[in-house]
Image 1 (cartoon, rainbow, N blue to C red):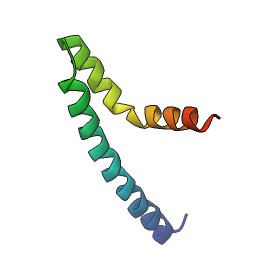
Image 2: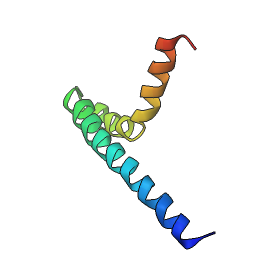
Image 3: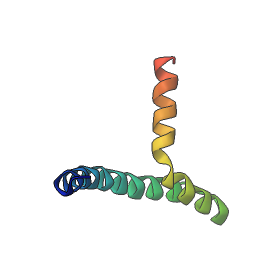
Length: 65
């Protein structure tokens, strides 16, 4: 693979990583702040790791697909 092509692909990937990181922080704050117990807070942390899956699921459900 071309070295320049690899650098371009990596630079595009970093932009999405920043968006995911801020989404993770926001989701973690939301889920942990609404937790009613310690274990619900732990579950909230793990939900924050996979928040994009929840977004895609709800979007597809809204669109009726």
